[in-house]
Image (spheres, rainbow, N blue to C red):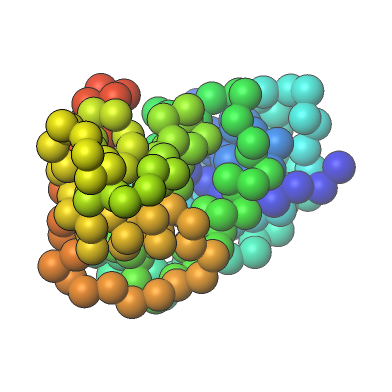
Length: 215
């Protein structure tokens, strides 16, 4: 079968080849790109970090040789901007360190590809990290009525009569919920964005012992 794959990590392999770590709608795979360190190799220019390719995939083999590879998007406009690459790395690092075999990979893959098309990659990375809490089993809950904010430790909104101290106020919580359910790119104030970045980084450290770098 032919599948799309996003290269989230590369590694030199033997004398002239590379290992391509790719994320697909079926999960993570390792591809041996034979001879691709050679400039004359047809796979040379599509064997780079942060590149979307199509290739022949055997879903039952975690490691396989790269075959029938074609370039879909090399994200050159993104790669020209260091800050955009840094924010994209937040997403790619999460693939490597957080995504496990039992997750809804097709849904996550499509989300990642959509977010990489956003103009504001910092916003895209923030949105992704917020949405990913659901897939990882640490979902955010906004179900309580008369909410006065959001509590980091419980992962829930705080209602008016609770003794819990909210870590986000009502306005910040509304923006957190917007990004949690987001389906398209929107604009938010930089001050709100900074507050949500600080919050979600603390949330991952508290619940998952994972440090988000580059956001």
